[in-house]
Image (cartoon, rainbow, N blue to C red; front, side, top):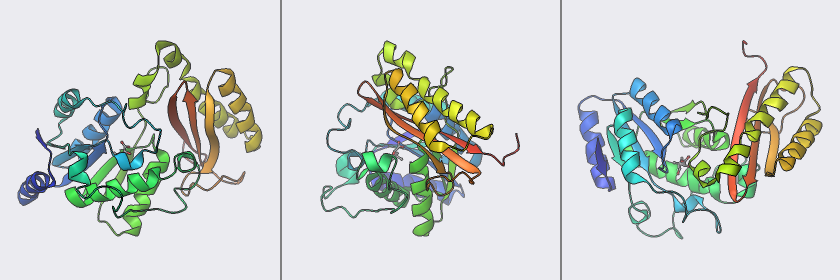
Length: 286
Ligand code: PAF
């Protein structure tokens, strides 16, 4: 696996692979890779001939006071994991390479509506930063397909929308969330949790399942379900940012008649903000 740091080297390597008739798959990441990222790369190796991953902690998607500076940077360990997973090329640019003219005047990509609410409400500008960097990365790599984790459900919806709206010929694949044995969704931010807080964290996924079970049993009083679960999270020591039931395909607030639902949560545990979700399609075969 080659690691390149410039757009020029990236384009040359991808052009060589294309010249050999290879289909290109892309897995964008911010590094500090865990089994969830490895699963995305493995999936890509099954679908295409040449897999490109990127590692770039994108300053444009972090708000003031967020964890940009302390976001873990573990390039050597990440390279090893990517190599083992069968990745062919790693693009690991600097901020100067990605934003050579600085970020203030950078053209932005915004996806209205889908960015509103949920993480978009508590992290203003976050999805504009994500949509902008993903658009730039897509233009640099020009992959046939790109793979993202479903843990970032709203992000995946935003990326699907931008690809559709901007007519990008890229197939977007969402892969299921990879979880620890106790149910906690794998995340680079889990490393910020002390042993004590890490033991509490699985309450998030248990809560999502409790709501899903109640809905499956016919409960449709969503505000009551949410209210009860927020109390449980608070009792466990979390500070919920949001807990919502939405219509999965559109992300609009769910109605009791909807059959394809997603339950989404974000909560602070200590100073660490964790997110998770559970997709519940009542019409899917059991
Ligand atoms: O999900 C992430 O790691 C990031 O938001 C992404 C998609 C790589 C853009 O920086």
